[in-house]
Length: 310
Image 1 (tube, rainbow, N blue to C red):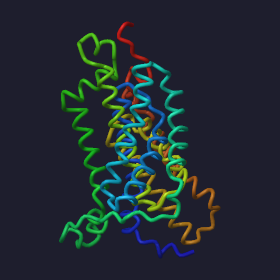
Image 2: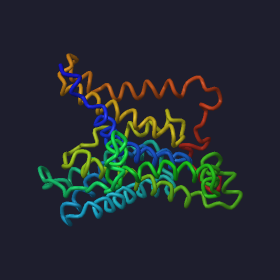
Image 3: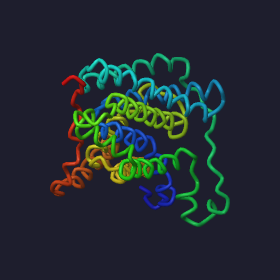
């Protein structure tokens, strides 16, 4: 076993890449849940975004168009969920689970013929002298645009929810949709917009998997990333900063266990493969415990059906 062969600088830089898909999906789901909607179809939206982005990128030779197509694909699938739950008032849990199954099946159908193909490379941003800085340059300034977009989204979502009128309205709808409706706010429209945003973020996260993280298409390649994103939102207490921490923790443990496997650590591969899920959930549970009423941060109307006549 050669643990000394593991480069900590490369390890930290890699964890940012590994965490980006889950961070994007979790941020989108956070906004959705803040509006009072529980969308369990994140896994389906991610895998749909993965194949949409991969197919368009391969056909056009442009990763940028691939990422845009993934966002559109994820948003379109999420709006199916939105119409079913917000207009036709179907059960959110059952519809979300159905959306996941539908997304997995749809991606498998579209993905036929793309197995074994390589997508066009996603170029890293040239930040000039910053990239040449020792240690910091390799860790922070050697990534592609999507990594920085995900970090900017953390700040943007936090500012939007905490300081803007739109964020206040979104939170009001999530806390008490009847009161928000009585004040004249369009609850269904607001929730549909939040659902579309969440779908676009999940689709972008899926495309990052198929175009950058694992640059190829494999059926079922999200491998539960959507479910871990859902868990991170809950255990992160619906706060963007904690969601970032949870996503980076998961990505960090994932990269570390891969390095440990490569170094020949005498631990069963199955245990190492399960460790990112186990450690992330354990740490997030500890983070969300013993914080009194602060832990009770779930939107009060989360998962409840809204009807204007009730």
